Amino acid sequence: MSDAKLKVIITGVTGMVGEGVLFECLDNPAVEQVLMVNRRPYPKQHAKLKELIVPDFLKLDAVADQLAGYDACFYCAGISSVGLSEADYTRITYDTTLHVAQVLASGQPNMVFIYVSGAGTDSTEQGKTMWARVKGRTENALGRCGFRAEYNFRPGFMKAYPGQRNLSFWYHPIAWMYPLARLVAPNWVSTLQQVGRAMIHATIYGAPKTVFEVKDINALGNA
Image 1 (cartoon, one colour):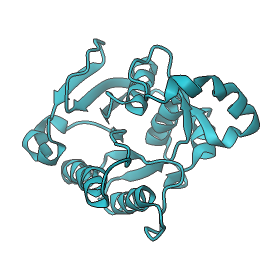
Image 2 (cartoon, one colour):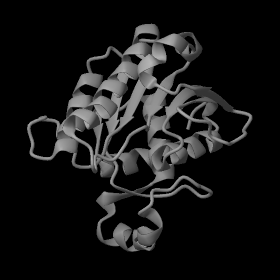
Image 3 (cartoon, helix red, strand yellow):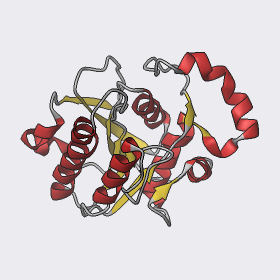
Image 4 (cartoon, one colour):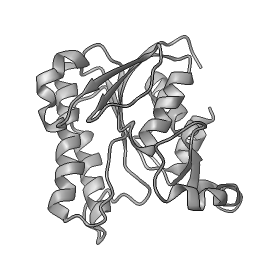
């Protein structure tokens, strides 16, 4: 890829996407250090790996000094909107994400911030689907935080990274469909290895767009 040696922050490693991105960063020679910012401990040991426990991301200011010196933040934390009101989902998805981004940008404007939203996110913020509006609002606001670069990844169905343990409850029942989906709808599926590689590639080389749909993630992840 290059001789770059990145130091990256990852949130959400106790979830499927974050854990997959973490595994790629640990395996990828372009990454020399990973700081997991977690609400609860994640039981993995690796020479590249450090962990910072922050039970409430809205209080990240208190540990801002421990976030210095990193090249990128891969923000993979998130929650399903099922059963949540728009106000509650907004607090978790918009308010918390923006607070983390603002803390990082205020101290490290040269950082690259990559946000995982999802296929179907509504950039207009005006659509009928609540989660898509909130995610779109979040993407738009992140672009105004002042980072050197900010990218929004909108993955669809993702194949787990080998060895993952934190898988979504629905993953195993439908995992068998991945090979078929890749044949009939290749622009709707990715591997988490591709997602992680695309993040690393965008951090090192930059990219001509800020929103990455599935086909864009796959192209960058295969570069």
